[in-house]
Length: 300
Image (tube, rainbow, N blue to C red; front, side, top):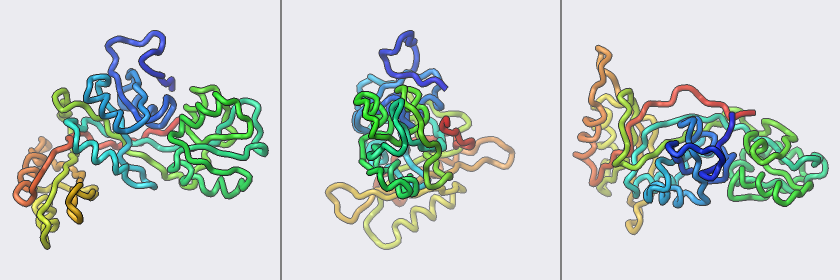
């Protein structure tokens, strides 16, 4: 699969959707963005806050953000950013994560003494690193960025852990493939748009919601019971602290929206929001979208 680099790439289409990602070209977020929108023009950003700022300003039409990894858990910062920006989740995708040891051309495995990558990627390759004690793990801001650094510095004693696409993009070599500890390593990504431009998929069968509760016994049970009574199936719940209010929390839930027996769509999303509003101080719908079924595999 060819990866589009950035807005300055030769032959870029003026009318292509610009999608902001956190990280360098060749990252897993880059790959996920192109699986969500194949003809997208990628806008790389150093920080997640910059991704949402690009969306707010119009520098990007959408953003592709990782929201949850099957091993590392939720990307908590992205829940906060979704809540505090006027954006809507419009699509979901699952990406199988495959890590590789990458080096510059001509480097040899037994000469590498440092391996750079994002801290999460390093943690997911502990077994490989333990089997190669000569290699010191060094945390870096981005998986693809670590490959970019190798190529720029032409350091044959350093390696990086990243995707095969990052190696291809920067002209590096793969010394070892599939070095992750657990093959069941998947990341769930959201495609996010400005709320004023978001269109709900008619086949949407999943919804994400944020809400707050009164700080009293039984409030969460009451809210979830009301949600269950609407026929929605809760698939995830996450809590985040409320700034300035110690021991109070914002809850984030994902739920499947049920269908009527005759196969037509029931308006369970709206009924779920109404049910929650009776028990919650704040309820914000983050988006309705089609549940990701097939898992896209990162190119090996």
